[in-house]
Length: 334
Ligand code: AMP
Ligand code: TRP
Image (cartoon, rainbow, N blue to C red; front, side, top):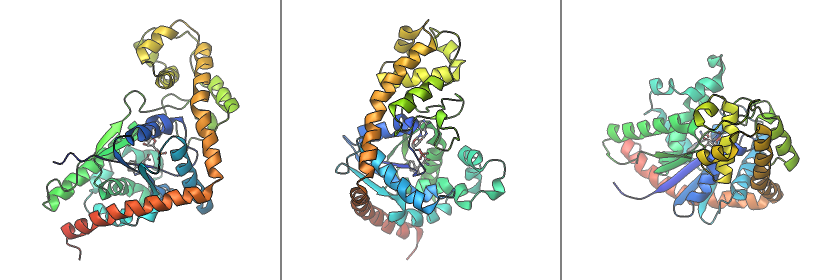
């Protein structure tokens, strides 16, 4: 096996990015680009598995690029582009639709969550979404994929698809089996209103999440209103784990302050949650508002953002076409 390392990840352009995307994915993207070849994709074809208004989708693609750049991704170091601009994603997805198994897709919990109670009404695209995700990764023969914990199952499916392709077409090691890179301490940032649900763009209440573009005032209000606990902060993790909303706030604090959870608990135990919330508000405002300001600034430079996408597309397409040529050959397509 070669030791070549290539990072790939995708983010859906479906609205405001939030603290969960930032801590669970984007910060990792930025640190990886220092030493590794990285490809970051705005996955617009994934977004349309649930209906998107066309003009909003276009704006959301640009906003996602602006968020990438504002958190520190450098288009000179990383390849940044949108999925639909490289047609190889859709072509490989079709081939992988024929490799992947219905039984495998039936186990995907994200489909069950997103389709809700009336699965018959979900789009076919939503059902085969994980096959397109496997195509994104395998099109570049990526070896490492930074994602939040919610994507772990999809990554496992991508590995199964890669392995089955390598077996079916008798080409051992053709596709590397992609490894997930999941942030150790903060792989799942939870909703501020319900500590058992992940923070999400699609949650109805804006009070459930901190958006990267929120003002200091909004951040402060949201943290003040966040669910916590009426007793004081415990001194051990076991007790804290019984209160998922409180655990989430302490986790976020620990991640941004770069202090371990144990050290944070030692510092905070016996104090009221209002104390934690004051400290957390300060930290989050310092971390997030410069990013939000930069996003807003970049959004005024649409031509620049489009140019970043165009250059990224050209770079991505070269790798994609080269790999696709070999893939078509393996499958027997002329
Ligand atoms: P999405 O916005 O669903 O395309 O997600 C983009 C990236 O952010 C993926 O790697 C997700 O796993 C990650 N992510 C989304 N929500 C959260 C969350 N609440 N906590 C941690 N990571 C998240
Ligand atoms: N499914 C991912 C999410 O919702 C987005 C995604 C699409 C992705 N293709 C990918 C992530 C490839 C990593 C690699 O967050």
